[in-house]
Length: 102
Image (cartoon, rainbow, N blue to C red; front, side, top):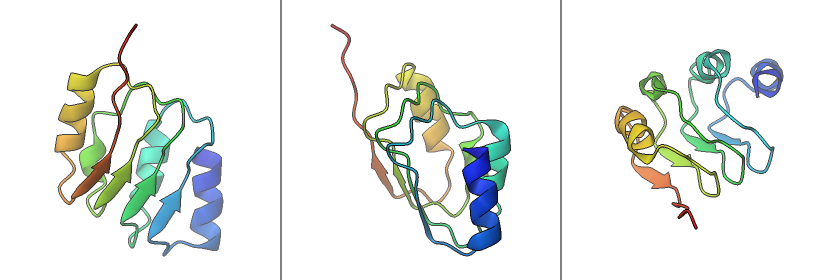
């Protein structure tokens, strides 16, 4: 993810919507989270249909994000995910589905 974000920062630092759906990302690493904060106009992030199992604890750094799509990710620790998402100060729309273990 970091490579894609660095490239976007150089080509379009003022984008408002980031679509990283279906990229096979497995996590949001700390350097990528820091890079996301540098997009000052970013309001929507689509990370749907990836392989993300855990969310970082410091999502509150994404102060301008109002819409976050995590649909189709196999999140493992729902309580930790909710705690992390609850820290996002501007979040108004969340798309997420919960997978049941068989």
